[in-house]
Every structure is written in structure tokens, then in C-alpha cells.
Image (cartoon, rainbow, N blue to C red; front, side, top):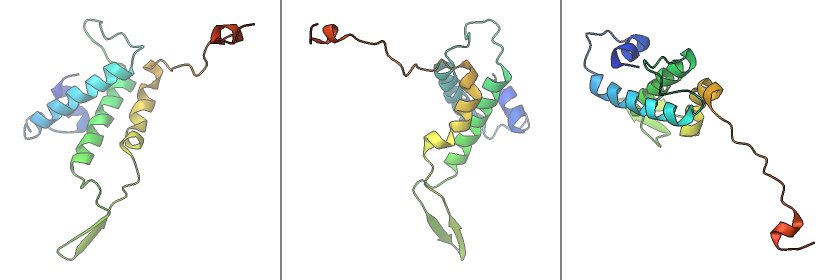
Length: 127
């Protein structure tokens, strides 16, 4: 995904370069997360064609990062010039990104919760 593609999906005009530097960083971070999480996807294909769900996850990741930058972390309420705002600080970052992981889940190998059975004699008990 290119910066131009990301900007189009975010609804940012191509000629608006005021956010390009930070969007490049967000895009790089989102791609790093996608490559790490989407371990079933073939990232070596050339040209790289991303499935819609991975693309949407990247866009959502960037939007969440933009929203987090606009927040005062840990602030529950704030009054400025007679105006009051309240923030819900209960959501963890893991919760905020849950829909990103959901979008990418089809390309993620789930770790098995089952382990191979061990016999008593292999654990030092002897039989």
C-alpha cells in the first residue's frame, strides 16, 4: 500500500501534504503489524496485492492512531474556557485495535491451546 492509496481511502485529497510525514509513519507501523500478525498471507508476492480485509485493517489501524494522537491519555475530564469534556479511559489499546485483529484474523494462524500429552514416565515419575 502506498501513501497515495492510504490518503484516498482516508478521504484526504492527494494535494493535501500537511499530514504526509505522520501518515507515512502510521502506514509503516500498520504494515509492520500486518506482516507480523497475518502470518498466513504470502508477503513475498510481486507485485504485492493486499486482500480487502488486510487493506481495511491497515486503514483502521491508521485511523485509531490518528484518534489516539488527539487524545490526552489518562485524562478523565477536562474543562477549558467554560467547556467541559469527559473521556472514557477504560478501553485498553488492545481493545481499541480489536476490530483490526478481527479484519486480519483470516490470515492469522491461531495458536493451538492443546499440547501433546505427556506420559507419566517422561515426567520423572517412571512407570
